[in-house]
Length: 386
Image (cartoon, rainbow, N blue to C red):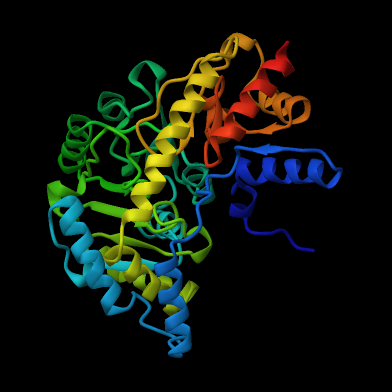
């Protein structure tokens, strides 16, 4: 057999699926595992969203649609961006995607040549670094520091900008830390991007998942007409992970070319799923509000619990549904701690190193589970270290 393309030896997987597989292997042996590894809300997709999809299927809305997305959903996203970011993008600034991940891939594939540099947060969503390496681009991770509550520091970004810098990736609220950047920080990074003519990919998939902090987007500076690309979707806020529905908002020439990538790679986003997306944005938002009320209770419970474990310390996240406790005082690597918790306590979380080198010394818990399970997990962790 001949060798595969070089890039296939650089692309990486995700720790969440690695640890899920380990946990499932234990469960097949009859062992109980408490799951905190997968970033998936445990709430069902709201009924009115599901009914919209059922109705569309019954109406035979099941064929090909425009590669860039159906008009009604793009109009709903126009209203959404106006309400949440304060400007109304043109229809041809919007591209509908089968999930948010293709937006990461398409943006990097469409904007960055080999050797050009991409700045991104570390620890951060694993797909960022994986695609950087796949494209053979310049790899410029920026360490998120606990003393700055894991927020990306504009001064750290400025110190890493070179003539080769092509793209800055932001993610706020952030995975894996739950941090939320301030308006001053977002504005400063947008200024740097304008000054140095650098694109920004602003991953805003958790934009509706906030507790007390305010959401800020760099897109307000240029209204996504010049350099800022918004990435958002439906998976997290509306418990639609398996539906695969997301979107990009960006400069028209960029979105036009991304549309060609859609045609060549995916043809279009599933027709009846797009109808469900309209209902999600324009319909009853109470399920989202109730989900966030429950997540707040869970967040407070897990932060309190983790801080009660010897040699653990945990900041309170401001967004999303993740905690990122510091476990350096255990004198174990993050992978060793994650393996210990899985095999000795029956608690599945993720090593911080799965999210980049700066995640070493931390572990991630997705608290998409009940308070009862959270409390049980905390007790099992304590017992495993006793």
